[in-house]
Length: 132
Length: 194
Image (cartoon, rainbow over all chains, first blue to last red; front, side, top):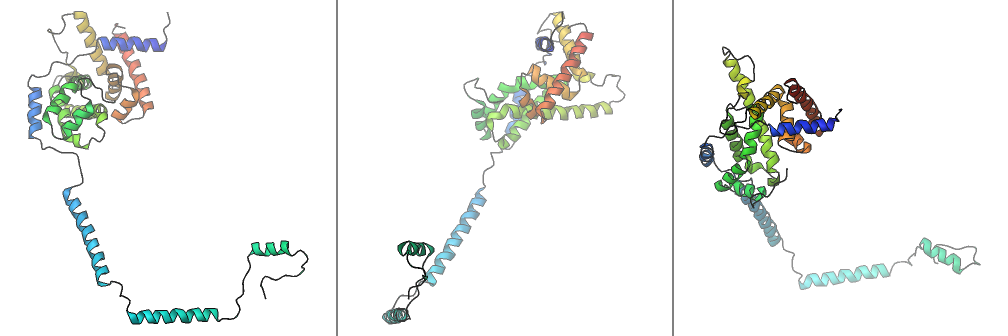
């Protein structure tokens, strides 16, 4: 009778499992010898960032904060005095007057505005982008 | 292979305790796995220096536990260490054989697979005979083919995991298994036991 390869494999594996060579029994002292060796070995704990690294990072962060703080302390913004307030006020008034007093401003129209003008003034044949 | 939960505590828990330096947990781990390690090493290397090889495996485990990132895959990792120890052990045996060139041994692997007489285990002569034949059949395979056959057919490990242990593609595991089974079958047929 012809057997399929799978059946052959199954038969072989079953035979191997049934008659597998069994190892001789271990030396009675093997476990204790091993534990003794383990006790002599230095314990190597899982690697974590070392405390030196943590100290280094903390020191760098503290130094940066100190430098930034002292810079701000020594270069604090100057307080506004009464004189400077008056000067500022005068400057603002002057620049405002200059801007108001200029020649009539030219208002540029956007493309949307120009389209609106076309729709609002259909009779007009000429139109400009600027108001007189 | 993912950790099973045989004795109430999973491999993961035990390994984590070992990683903290707990010797009792390591003893638990040893007792849980020493039979598998011993059996695998015996089938790969024979009985010479078997105790030493088992001890070496667990020593390497202890030293390397801190680097094990996924404790749930402890079993796969352990088999890989066993495989490394087996290959290292065979190199040592080969050196010893060279040194003992005056020996009368003709079969270069005979010292590794001496017939173990265990009268206390089984008195059945046929069983002893079949075990001897299987042992010699394994001996006739190369270490690579033997490892795949032992891990897959005797230790019941899946092919994917064997690939991880031996660091070879799953396709190579399949082809080696195919070759090893054929060679083993032929050997057993020649011996008239299959």
